[in-house]
Image (cartoon, rainbow, N blue to C red; front, top):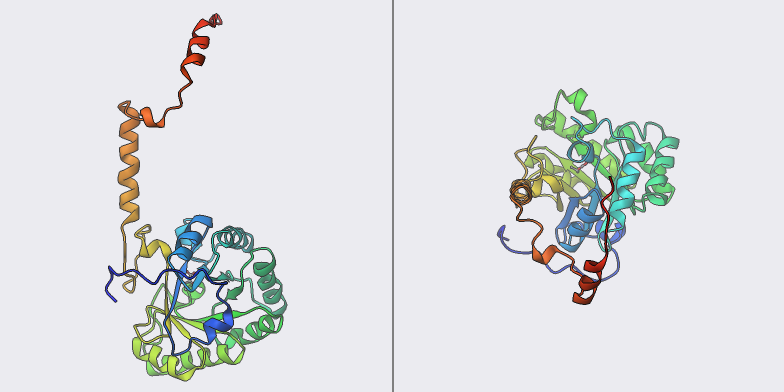
Length: 294
Ligand code: KIV
């Protein structure tokens, strides 16, 4: 499909479920996008996306932090709940923030908050073998889980920056084991971030759940990108794997600067933006004598 073609008209059918996404392994590609509030959730949903992720990337693109480590559970719940009001069709996934799933009990409690307070229908968390017990416990509690392996931004300090992972055969083997552990623990899908396409292909063949790529080439069962990257709203850091489909940041700045000039030059508001009284009321108001206060 060319970049100028539109996706299918979004279905008005009932909401997408996690089992339906899981069943799309090797089927129609799964489309996913992040969103962080009511209006972006509505825009992404109406574009026909299968999955909307309230990503912890909101720490960077919404809250202005340097990385994803500072966003709190309360902030994630606040944004997930707002997004849920705009998403009617896509599967809404809440992203568990850094340190919110360090133990099994903590993981289940916090995943529960995403569902009951945030109104998400599933959660995502980062890691493989090391978080398999948490994934299993959350799934056992009845909450669908999406895994995330490869470049897991919550481990940025250990990686020494936002660097592609799995570039050696040994590292690739470890990533396959991570993805398999995520599957075995009961996840319905797994995100593969910033890994060589060869490794993404290996993992996609090695697991029975859909793989959702971001910087993992065109071999995965679906794709996910960050809303602000796709729409050109965030230029502080643009990974190579992003394709920008619009320049809304630039367009917005230009529009707002025109508004500034219009106000300064007295061209806004115009007639169309002004509320007028009826003629008879204007007649009445002119009869009112008003004394200026001293
Ligand atoms: O937080 C996020 O936006 C993510 C996606 C990039 C997968 O985790």
